[in-house]
Image (cartoon, rainbow, N blue to C red; front, side):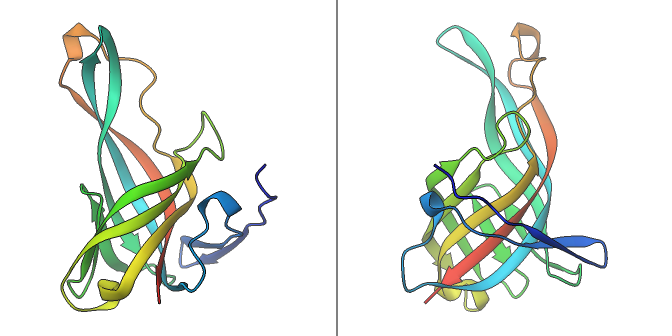
Length: 166
């Protein structure tokens, strides 16, 4: 099962950056170390779709700003999923594993593998990303029907992203 998670919240100029014990299921492989921890604040974007005769909200993309421990914007997180650091380096990832830490109250914690890089800079050597300490971001629980097909809804979320390199 999931190990007990000890979270120590440190408030720095209104931005919470957390120390966290990463559950075994989403730990990065041996030999990788954190190069950046950023706090994300933004939205998860959902679209009403019809699949196999059933209407549901499908994940489209995140739209979030990344903040450092001092509360300064250091990057963006957008569709791809793509993370871009302030000096222009960027990575695209794919989800390897996820854990629903608080089912029904927040989006899953993730282990993401970087599948492409662009630009030189901090993200140039990033190979893995953890999404932890999530809050919110779940798809809407209602409002997706024939009258709203193709409609989009934005749902606020926060999370911490830990970027790992060799």
